[in-house]
Image (cartoon, rainbow, N blue to C red; front, side, top):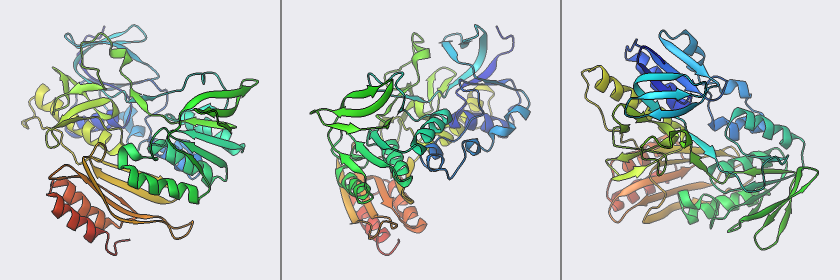
Length: 419
């Protein structure tokens, strides 16, 4: 058991790195332990489904910029390739898979998520999920061998992988159980446009379909059977049907684990226990609802706020704890064009596509502006192929929670010649 209490960050992820770096920048020089279950230095995940798959970026180059300096940080105990297995919340005692126990002054949970899988896929060659660098390396190797690719799942990850595989010249089928690709996030109207863009580039899209089973021969996948009996030939299958928070190790801890680690608006899950990144579900004061966001920008921003709040609580930094109430942001790169979204778009009661133009040629992006909200306010906005000034005006409308009609005026102005 450790003799000196430490700030323990469980999860050597973008969120975990943000906590560590923010603590150091703020002058914290006490004991600090960063624990990660992968043996490699923390890395960026967004490029894995985009630039790494198509070969524009090497896996090694995804290492987070600050990660290379971790081992030189004074007072930092870097534990890579080690899992945390339990947390005693009352005593703030962390147990590692080695049997070692750490007494902690504060604990940050930043363990992220793990990909969902489909039954019958375990141990079958050619069937992939995509979460880690090793996943991306193995998938790219199979893609380069050529053949038929089936992507199961029409979310952000699924559509990005389908676009990458098609960019490599492969025959691709995208199958989703939803009404349209990305419909749960961006709505059916925008999803329909994205589906059309994929079809225009040669991808076969199957909507409202689920996987009934996999066909195999000699231990390798040969096809995907959909509900209804249709069989799609497959040399490679990519399962992108969502993820679940990596909270299994916290079972019995007494924390709220209903969907990730439940926190208040200060990202506090229990006294001196915090959560950040994909695994954190926290109360957003301005949206007046709990959110859990699996996007890169959120991981960094939330990690920085958690670090400041730890210092405010633990050592009395002079700055009071701050509520975490960002304007959420995510992007998706497909075929060289970028989808950018601000605020809360999923589950909106109100949605309007202000402008929608399909791509005029295979090498041109579509042009889309859409607005999301409730009965009175703007809560979110999406732009495809918008210039930065127009994107900034959309963000301002979302950040201001402006009235719906005012937001529509801003969206129309953003869509007028800002391509």
